Image: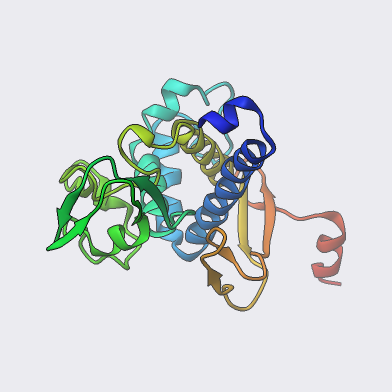
Length: 235
């Protein structure tokens, strides 16, 4: 939180609303969209939940298992969240004030200038990431760990001393959402095609993301709403 936000000024309040709401909504939408596009990833996530005792083999969620220490042990889930944030970072970049004159690629950057760094361009061009346009959570697994090579190749929450203070809460929220989606529902796209994505003011579908959610019974079969069940019944 910066000084303006700490003082409770209108600008600070707007900043907190924008940072806490819009970016989290953006990342949540991107998470759902990628799970829709990549059913194999969703099934692998469900398998990890079964292995960790969060899902019974029959499909229904186990009671009292969604604790912080359990979430921290879900390594594939962590990889999924990281990959969503790599490809679909809500914010395009950030600004920094130059504290002392320096040279970058033959250009002199004077002290006092305000410079912008691009998160998306960094993720797209960082040499540590292979097949940058492919949604591949395994790139963050122990066998590859592509985000470990270099300090500022992966920075969805910014970097340095001004990194996002809410990043741990945001990742926790996304993990809980993913677990709930994987363990308690089946979902499908409610439109013929996926919506077009725009990048401003945060990354989001132009006309929203329309999704049908169905509850699951103990065998992970869809529980249809009464009206829909009647409409689809054979007579």
